[in-house]
Structures are given as C-alpha cells and as structure tokens.
Image (cartoon, rainbow, N blue to C red; front, side, top):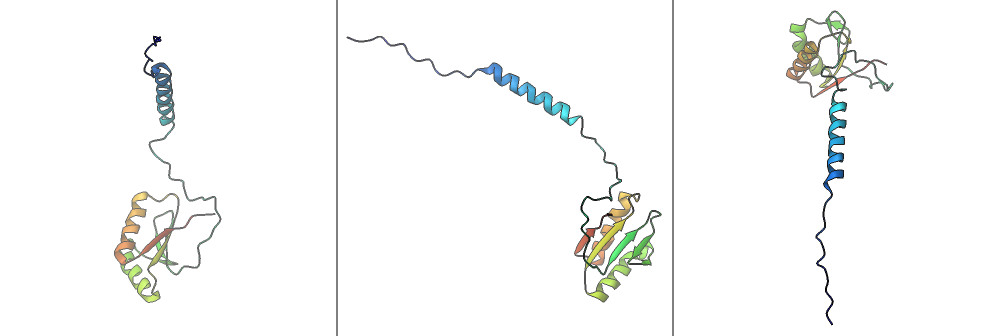
Length: 130
C-alpha cells in the first residue's frame, strides 16, 4: 500500500523582521551621523600621556605670534630651510621635532613641514604639551 505524501514546502524567508532590522539600522546611522561635526576645533596641544620625547638636537618652535625658532634661535620663515640644512649637516641627524602654539594656523604648520622636507628631514614629529 502506497502512502500519499504531501510535497514539502520550500523554505521561506520571512521579510518583515528583515525589513524592520534594516530600517532600524538606517535610522541609527542617520541619527549618529548628525553628531559628527563637519569641522574640528584646533585647540589641540594637550595630551593625555605624559611621555616626553628623548633628547633631540633639532627643534622647530612656533609661538603665538608666528615667530619661528630653530632650537632657541629666532629664524625668519624665508631662511628656515637654509637654517635647517645647516643644523642637520652639522649634527648629522635629519630628525625634526615641531612644537607649536595651539593658536597658529594650520597653513603655517604645513608650510613648515614642507620646508623641513625640502631641507632634507627624514623624520618630522610633533611634540605636545603636558
């Protein structure tokens, strides 16, 4: 005697819970993206770590009035490349540490970074305040 069997139904994926999850994720990402500020304030130079850099021989410092110093000697910005090249060749190191006031412009920082690269610096580090 043969039994009559029903054909098994193919498995179905329930779409309602899937749509709920997707909409919840969309709402989450839309809301969280509004909390991201498009610009960043630049009052940065405080750091959590108190780790000091080792003794260095070449430090470029920029004060609040955009005066540039190599170690403790004031150098005009147009003579900075020559001053860096002379100091690097004299000490045999091509590492530059940058210390800047928190109110200097980003354009000045990038300009000094470019000048240091043109002078032959192989390493450029930024030191922070305690």
